[in-house]
Image 1 (tube, rainbow, N blue to C red):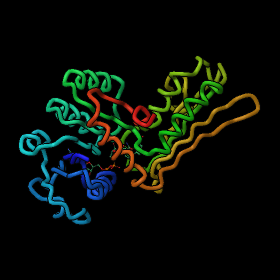
Image 2 (cartoon, rainbow, N blue to C red):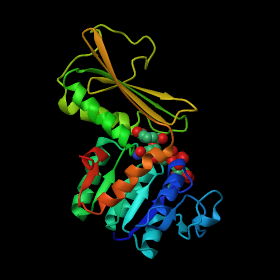
Image 3 (cartoon, rainbow, N blue to C red):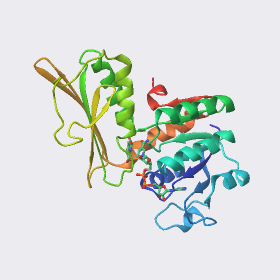
Image 4 (tube, helix red, strand yellow):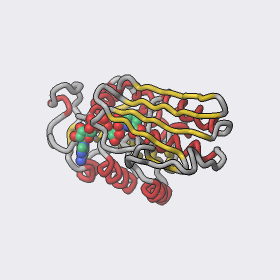
Amino acid sequence: MELIKIVLAGPRGKMGSEALKMIESTPHFHLAAAIDSRNGGKKIKDLPGLPPLDAVIYEDLDICLDEVQADVLIDLTKPEIGKKHLEIALERKVRPVIGTTGFSEDDLKRLSQLADERETGAIIAPNFAIGAILMMKFSQMAAKYLPHVEIIEKHHDQKLDSPSGTALKTAQLINEVREAVKQGHPQETEDIAGARGAELDGMRIHSVRLPGLVAHQEVIFGGEGQTLTIKHDSMNRSSFMPGIRLAVENVMKIDQLVYGLENIIQ
Ligand SMILES: NC(=O)c1ccc[n+]([C@@H]2O[C@H](COP(=O)([O-])OP(=O)(O)OC[C@H]3O[C@@H](n4cnc5c(N)ncnc54)[C@H](O)[C@@H]3O)[C@@H](O)[C@H]2O)c1
Ligand SMILES: O=C(O)C1=N[C@H](C(=O)O)CCC1
């Protein structure tokens, strides 16, 4: 298999540090450089707790890509940085694999257009856990028969964005197949703002943030005399790594932007 040269943004983060281990243990992956908000000029192996990798750390992706040859950028940072990095990478025909969440529909449209213009593959995946992809696919199947649905997503309390990227993606997939329904009582009131959660395409999304959680989602369907709950739990960040590996391998074979790993795992 051909060696894939990777730049990783966010190496000290919860996801980034796990991704370093995944890159190190994958024979056909090579960490060419890393992007951090500090530690420019140091090497990954100089930072406490990170694997003994020789890759140099840059604080600016543009400068990094001037100096380092790369095939793929993996971004695991924060919403505004992920968007900026994605654009820089596409401009330079380096293929982005973006795990960072917080992208709006407008962002996705604009970035998809840019990927087309640059004829460069890109993958944005709100959730890399294979079980979460299945949870979303099963939810889409169920919504055809049980259109009344609410989403409860639960994450650790260091998460910046809400609702989660996974909840937004789940709602999008459900919305593609379910008939239009008005949920809840027509005269229901919200006596404390937010009590019924966020509303998207007629669905309610509830976001829970607590220490001790990692990433969890329940999609609850209600029908006459019955409910169906489809639930996924990520217990740790290694649950996302096979999906990131798959995305890096697949982004090398495409020349447009793909949003969601369900489009790769058919
Ligand atoms: N797609 C998925 O499956 C998945 C899974 C988990 C987390 N996420 C998303 O990934 C992102 C990171 O999550 P996390 O839990 O690792 O967060 P984290 O806060 O632990 O890590 C983010 C890292 O980004 C770094 N960073 C900030 N600004 C930067 C910059 N300008 N350049 C380089 N690095 C910079 C921070 O220093 C930090 O180390 C979040 O958006 C989260 O929602 C996605
Ligand atoms: O830890 C996070 O932040 C996660 N975010 C993703 C999302 O927003 O859907 C899912 C995985 C964990």
